[in-house]
Image 1 (tube, rainbow, N blue to C red):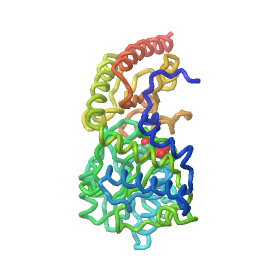
Image 2: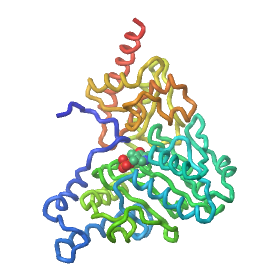
Image 3: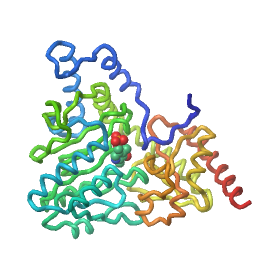
Image 4: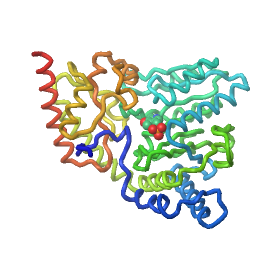
Length: 385
Ligand SMILES: *Cc1c(COP(=O)(O)O)cnc(C)c1O
């Protein structure tokens, strides 16, 4: 069915881990009850839901009633931003501060709010792909309703100074949301220590099934209902819960907490191997800060290369990577994230994102390095002939 043997696109989605698979199987087959039902089959499902909420709250160091299950990262981002905008605009607060390289789930939500009269401030992320606290400090004024800055950028892998942002927002009495979809697989998140008020996570980016995510919302922050209907998720997000996916999310976050350090050490070694090989190629640019990054996402731009052709050639060799993010491929626009770090459209079009998971091996990294070198040579020769 597919001939991908090497999967290097884990920032787009991930495979389900064996442990998660085992955990969700009963809820796909025998234990299919509706958690709102009173009889035992329903109670089994509601117990599974409670347990998943407990596991998620432990992973994030928060309380269980601060976790709201959603359909994924996109919904969590939409909900967080729209709910805060709605409640704060009543107080005359209409400024929302963000970055130029957020995921489209955030950017397009903000675009809609801009049409409704909100003032959106896009902080620069500079060549290293990291926001500066002094810029945020200047941008926060009395009418600021919300700061939404992603924890880790999904295209270049840089880590934002979330702790400092949280501290500043707390001092200035501004609500802080972070899209932690790419951070959650690699960074220990502590919503208390980092003063995070709202946070988005997606299951399928961390070896759980597609179709479940969560929104953390600090107690005391007003959260309006997002989907109207029944009483699920304390009446704020109606609809029968996706129990197998939610169980998977709880299990996946737990598995990650138990293996994070070991997995990050392995990923750092793999990414070093790949970086060394890629940087031997002439006309290559390493995108984003070299140290303030998660170990799993690498992004390079190659001069005189069309990123799409590179992805297709790698596919012929059984390697799955992406050029730009999955959301931007399929159109020829260079990635907004690479533009935001000051890259020319020409160079941004020659970009390649390699995103690893704990399932990748040193052998795969070596094979990839060899294939990449050969393909770049071949594509450049074709271009010049
Ligand atoms: C994938 C991703 C999302 C969207 O998550 P879905 O669960 O696919 O809706 C949001 N933000 C970031 C940073 C992502 O990488």
